[in-house]
Image (cartoon, rainbow, N blue to C red; front, side, top):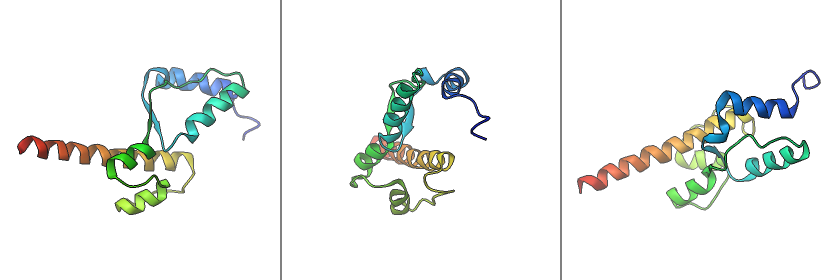
Length: 118
């Protein structure tokens, strides 16, 4: 499948065109994916397809919950959120990271509403 697939440059271009990725905030769990993507773009002389507006959900979660930074699977377990799929599989990790971000945003909104009523 890989031999018949598209070039890295082509995929980066499609990400930009199809998702408007250069003008959107994007997120990952830690800095690894961001740094790795930049490194691979440099290796293939491809234009980085994402904006510089990046949310590090691992750091965000640590600050929000007051826990030390930990792996995504451990944080999900600590929060009582079921991990779906297989850890380190791109689509599954993206879905699980989104669940952490949703939890942060919902709890933050709830706390904000409680503070307004006091």
